[in-house]
Amino acid sequence: MKGNKWACPAFALALSLLCSCSPISTTTQHTVTLVAKSTQTEFWLSVFAGAEAAATEYNLNLNIVGPNTEEDYETQNQMVLDAVEAGSDALVFSAIHYDNNAPAIDAAAQAGVKIVAIDSNVNSQAVSTYIGTDNYAAGQMAAQAALERVPGTLTVGIINYDISSANGQERERGAVETFTKSGRAEVVSVVNTLADAQYAQSDTTVLLDQHPEINVLLAFNEPTSVGAARSIQAKSMSDDVFLVGFDSNVNTVDGLQDGSVDALIVQNPYAMGYLGVESAYKLLTGQGKDLSATMDTSTRIVDRTNLFSIDSQKALFAFETRVNW
Image (cartoon, rainbow, N blue to C red; front, side, top):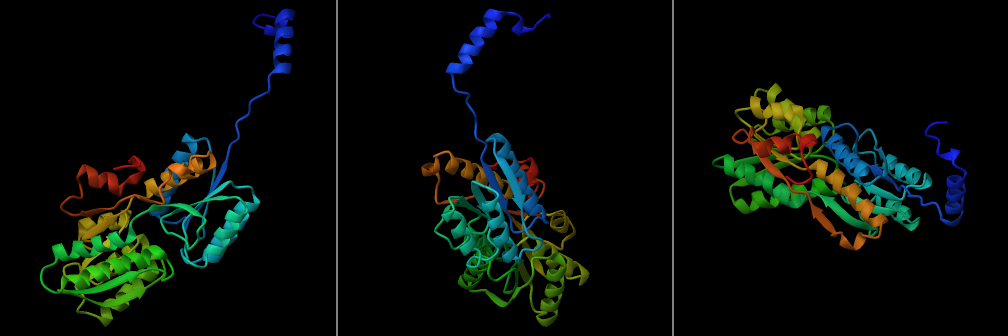
């Protein structure tokens, strides 16, 4: 039997003695569950791409789940419970509701599960690290983008999403305080809508009908930005309303070119996913002391003047970027 090592009795005996004396080494593959706010937007698809890249690099079993809408915190809580019962070792979590998601996260931590928060934090001391945008600073950036590009007096409307989301409220606070400090801007209305482009478009249209004096509009996430841009385009108000949106989306990037969007505050969702899973790995392998309490994944302003620069293209199309720009 050519090539058969078992044809040599001496070899077989030596191998059997070796096996009887040496323990068989095994590598435990940890399971990490990423509980997102949604699975429906390009922002979250980019998060998932980063998470999957890290899971491959660190040999983790990664599960990705999320509700159908960014308002359904009850489903998120059930997903956390399901992940714990299925034996997940760590959770990478983005909270829909800062307070109402906290009990589920606390219970998971009490069961021994490590907790990493990304994108939107949760009101729990069990969170080992938060990875995402400095949302107050991002709100300031959005307001400053308008102040630097629109002369004269600014009459501002804000399209925000769920009022219970920590990141949306921080963005609003940063923007409003920056506008107020400028002395030449007034925020006349803030609308909280569903994180859905169709609802955002409808609510933006109502806002603009009620306040025709608005010449600056801010929208604070991907669906609200798409909806606001569609409303402005449908009402043929691209020359009258300066829109600052958030995040990269085919529709908003097209809007930069057709004039319905004037500037985008672009986050780094790929880094949130990658660093979230990497941090979970470090917590599970005794390297948690190396983690910072907060990791800022940074933001960029993209407008028509820099749309086609290399840095802007990397920011807008994060699937092809590295974790750090």
